[in-house]
Length: 246
Image 1 (cartoon, rainbow, N blue to C red):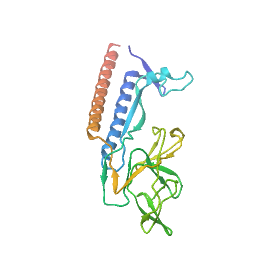
Image 2: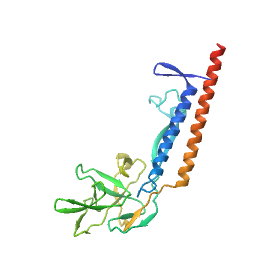
Image 3: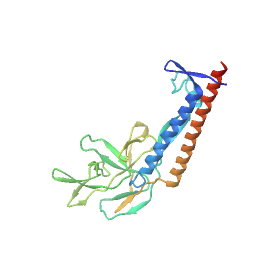
Image 4: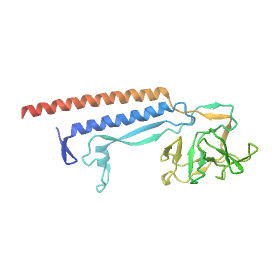
């Protein structure tokens, strides 16, 4: 059984379309894997993965009035990039402004220009001079917040406040904005300051990337991509045979 789909006003053999979707999906997954491997030495980096959905199942379960991603319901597409929030290994350092969270939660960062608050697991901080005050900040100049969600001011290089740690009832929807930071939204719920959070100084949390798992994902995606190209070749050969018969 073969069927056709209309794309941009042109009839396209659906087998070509489904195979193209599969190849593009695996290419996207390879991009995510490559990014994980590139950040294997990035402090506080948390592994990303790509989840997929079958469009036919998606369409069958969707509301009748909903305009789904593919009305014909064929093939698959990637649903979202998910994050593995499992803690990484802890490494001791010589810097007094390096910190690691023991357990769950995130450091809170505030942009001094926009006052936007973002979240990170990377505790590599520095002193940032602003006016007459010195603040604890990350390398991008964002202030680290205390348990009262206020910028931490240092006096003679000493920190008088406790570093705040925030967490969410639902971390799944945290938006990755780059630079190893996340932005919260309504779906995450209200950020809650963790009471009695354990923050270790002279320490950094390492990346939680598992090299073996990432290479396994790479091999899987490369093989799936190769199979998709073979299917494309087969579909092309069948189409050529049909044309010759006509």
